[in-house]
Each structure stands twice: as C-alpha cells, then as structure tokens.
Length: 299
Figure: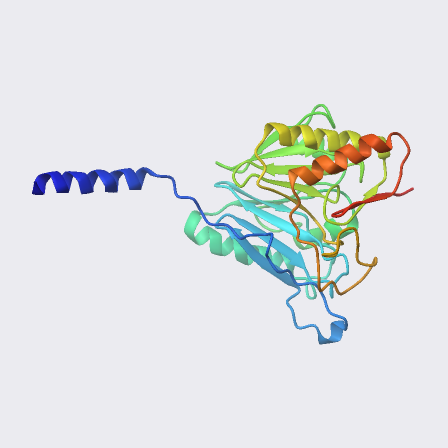
C-alpha cells in the first residue's frame, strides 16, 4: 500500500512538472496610466511610466507633461534580440531619458537571461514616434531602423510592399511585420506570436484615426481584419489614447490632462467595426464618430 502511494505521488509530481507554466500578465483593461496634470508645474509623475506586462514584455508611456502626445512604446525580449517599438515624442534625454530607461530594463533582464542586441524600430514616420532616436544611435549593440519604406523593405526583407507579411525573429520569439500604409506611408503593424498582442500604431487606437491616404488606409484595415481572422489575438494596442470614457467623446487636441481616459486595448470586434464603416463610406473620405475611435481624414 505504501509503495502504491509513493508511486501515485511521484506520478502526480511528474505530470505537474510537465505542464507548461502559464505566465501571469497585467490586465491592460484596468491598467492605470499616467495622464498628465491640469498644471504641469505641479506634476510629480515620472517622465516615463514603466509597466511590466510579463517577464519578457514591457509597455512604456510618455508623460503628457513632457509632450501632450503621450505616446506608448513597447519593448519585447527574445533570446537574441530585444525589439523597441518607437522612441517617443521628445528628443532631450534629460526631460525624457528613454535610452537610460530602456537600457536599465535590458541590463536587469540580461542578468537573468543573457545579453541581447537591441533593435529600435518604429510604427511609422511621425515625429512623436522617433524623436528620441538620437539617444540610441551609436550606442553599443544597438541598431536603429530607418524611417522610409525602402528602409523597412530592406531591413525586414519585404519584397512586395504593402501586400507581403513577413516574419522577424527575436530568438524563440517570432514577430510578424504587417505593412499598413494610409495613416502614413511607412506605417506597419506588429504581431507578437508569444503574447498574441497586435500593435497597430496610429492606424488603430482609441482616438482620432488620421487618414492621409484614404484608399491605402481602407486596404490596410482590410489586411488587418483578414490577419485577425487567421491568428489568435489577445489584444490590440495602439500608440495613443485620445478618447474619454464617454462613448464617442475625445479629449481636445493638445490637452495635457486626461483624467478619465478610454482604456488602451481595443478588440478585434472594434477593428471589424472600423473595417465595416470604411466599406460603407466608400471612396469619399468622411469623418465619422464611433464609440472608441473617430475616422478623421486629413489633407
């Protein structure tokens, strides 16, 4: 009897040890973000908020009192490379110490996991997404990707822009690069197969979706929708929050205080809502207000 019990316990221990560990992640639907102040002279929040999503993924947000755009940045670790998506809206490394912040995260991670090369990439070529590139250029073991379409085609090995979706390997962590021009010519989305997060930059986020090229934007949203039909999506994350918690109501442009923000994540269902709206609007660029975003054509 005693032998049977020992065998049973040993079997259970073996089975349990073979189960994959499900890593806990931050619930981004309830995550509080720094959101500026009515008077920035009274603001005592850090210039960069750091949220550890899981052991290999970080989300950073710039303080609105350093720049009203308050963009989000994303840092992914693989076994060989770390990928930083975007460098924020401020050049100065004293008021916005992005390199110092990212380097500290990398150093802490590397102590447990080994050194990695840092790749600095961008969701698109607008100043609030690459302003701090200069803090990273020339730094050891760091590559900063260019901002033009040709730079992206060359680095990611994209031969058929914008139709081709390509893989980018970080080392046992596969990212998919999805060209999505329309908001800006070199816009891309990035899908992380590990977390199932889909990054959509300024193409899709809770705010004003500025559309520069209407036809290209429509095709890009169709491409994203088709992608979500074929891949599991845990959440969709853009680079800004401009909507309030009141459906269809956005904060004023250039506001430095957003006390009741819409949550950052958007759903596949909301992406499909955008795609359907664009189809119905047809060929004419048209502003249209939705609960979680505003279609906003620009010249």
